[in-house]
Length: 480
Image 1 (cartoon, rainbow, N blue to C red):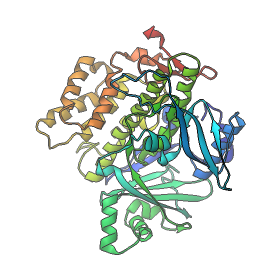
Image 2: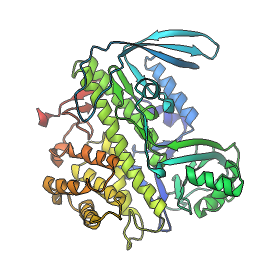
Image 3: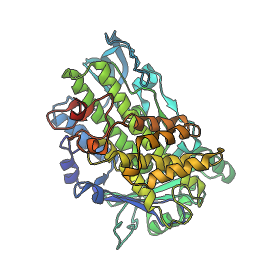
Image 4: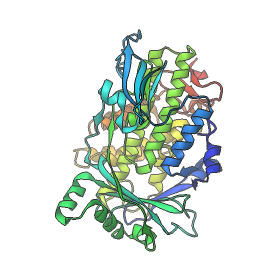
C-alpha cells in the first residue's frame, strides 16, 4: 500500500495499528512476531474492518485514474485467439483459452452491457471466475488439517492482551484445547473485537451430531473452554450474528494466461493463520501490475510475463503453505514437539524462522539472505516430515543442523544432499517449495543483498523492479 500511496489513507482512517501478533500453540509460553523490530517504525500492519478497508482501496483506485463500478456482476468473458506462442516451460505450463477482450455484466438494477479491455486481472475472490469457469484448474489440497470451517463474531468490552508487556494490544491466536483448530482475538478501531474459531470440518460435524448444538452454541462454548480466550472475553458481550465460512485450502498449476493475471483468493488459499490471505492477495496484485507493465513496455514477451506472475504467486503460496502447515501440525500434535525441541521452553526459535514468510520480507525485501530463507525452509520441512518414515531421523537431524547453522555452514552441495534425502519423505506440495528455493542456488548472499529494490524472488533471470515510475521486470546487474 505504501508503493501506491494508500497507507496514508489507512493511517488517517484510524485503523488499529498492528505492531505484531502472539500465538499460543500449546502449554508452552506463546511465540510472538514483532513487525516494528523487523521492519522499522513504518513496518506495522493494520487490524481492519474489511468493508471499510475495501472501500478505501476501491475509492483510491478511482482517484488514481481507474474507472470504478460498484454493484455490478460479471457473467461471462469473451475471448479471441491470443496469438501467443504455446507455453513450453515444464515447470509452469501457461494455459491458453484465448485473449479476453470483453466481459458481459449485469447490475443490481437489472441493467446489462459489455465492457472491453486489454488485460484482465481476476481478483474475484473464492468464486475465481477464470480459474473455475474457464481454466478449470483449481484443485483442493488433500490435507485434512487444511479443511476447516471458520465461525466468527464481533464483541464489545474485550480485554487487552499483554498489558504491561511488549506485546500489549497484540492480536492473540490460541490453539484449541482439543487440537482441532485455533481461535483468534483481534482488536479493532471501533471498540469491537473480532473473535473467531477455525476448526477441522469433520471434527465440527461430529461435535454437532453428538451435542445437538448449532454452530453459534459450539462457537461460544469453545471460547469458554479455552483459557486465553475465556480470560480475554470474561467481561465481553457478543454483539453480532455468528458468521461462517469454509476454509478449505486450494491452489492451481497456473495463475495466469495470455493477457490474464489471477490474484488473491481467486487463485489460491492456504488458511487464515498468520493472515496469509491478505499477504498473498496484495503480493499477487503487485505481481500482476508488475508483469502487465513489463509486457506493455516490451521488457519481456507476454508469455514470459504471464509465466513470471504464475511462478511468483506459486512461490509465495508454497512458502506460506509450508509455514502454516508446520504451525497447524504443532496445534494438532498438542504437547508433542514439532516446531520446538523437548527441552525448549517457548516457541521463540520457531517464530524467528517463520518471520521472513509471515512478515512478508521474503517477497519484497532486499535485506534478506539466501541463508535466512533456507533456514526457514529446512526448519519447517523438518517439522512436517513424517516421523514414521524409515530412516527419517537422520533427515530431521540434517534439516535441524541447517536450520540452526550459520550462513557459512550452508554450502550448495550440502543443501542439495539434504534435498535429495527429503524427496523420499516429503509431499509433492512440500517439494514444490524445496524446488522453488533450489532455483536460486546460484545466488550468493552478497548478490541477494544487492538486488536494488527488486525483492528476493529472481525467476527465469528476472526480478520485479519496485521503483516508483519504473514498475516492471529487470535483470539483476550480476546476471548481465
